Length: 242
Image (cartoon, rainbow, N blue to C red; front, side, top):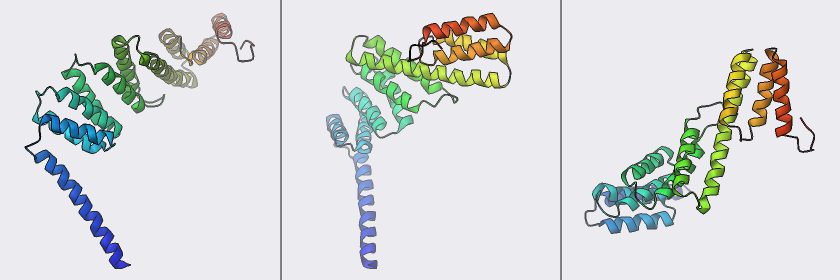
């Protein structure tokens, strides 16, 4: 049993060293052309060996920065890092592609993928929404490039989801003000958010909170008007007014 374990451990160590040696060998080989490296990266990506694919693309970019294939390698690097869940590295690689090759046909693809990358990094409402805003901006740039493409509807749907996330974030802020009895601040924040996001699913919640803030300040007429607006715009599933 001990001999078997020793054999397996030794084999695993040798395999690790062999893999590491291959990695170093690739970066040190001088006979590889840009076409060789691109083909190797694409082959590794197809086999879902994204780490190896990224390495090949990276070597091509570093060794042949002015190659006609460099743009494809940069896009491949960004895509492979994204597939390998290297969030920060993938975002940097996409930004480099968008900056270095603004006229490349793959720009819409890069924007769409970067939008998805940022979306999956976005934090829940109540936490920093920087990535949410960046994702909206990126998808908007994509729509400018492909307003009528099959992916345009998906991008528009993502923008709506992200805008609703921002509205839900504001809901947490308004609730915080209400809990602290800062009713004027709650009113101001709710009004501003409704003006910015009137078409998102969180709008009824914001209207309800606005009515509460107005009621707490003694603005009963405005509160009643807000509740009527809520009932008219958002009747419940049973057809009854709220």
